Length: 173
Image (cartoon, rainbow, N blue to C red; front, side, top):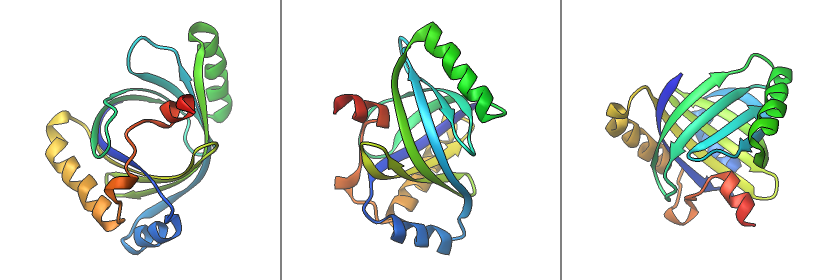
């Protein structure tokens, strides 16, 4: 499944407040997922296998590192079970080698096509992610407007924005 996202990642010390705001604005809470993302060595982009209680997927994406809203081109294959995801992780590790693993607790919320994550990442701390999800880069203006609208609603400050992925942040430590 190919998707186009406009997304942000921000450090957050106000998860409880942001959670209340999301729920007050009709966000659907999907649950809290313990996720381990295995990032594999690839020549370009990012290839990760997500194994969790709720979400299990093989994800390839390309995205520039920058603070603030950024575009991502994403190819995602859903995997039926956590056991199957773990098996894929072993096979991909044998073929490509694992670059880094990201371990997190993730609260997942949706408002229409916008996905919100309140993350607690082992070794890094607390974060908020906003992902406005579309089917084509042609939707960028609409997705950007949605992302900016929710940044304002959730009171994301410019100094909280993070340009890198969790994988980069962990390898830079």
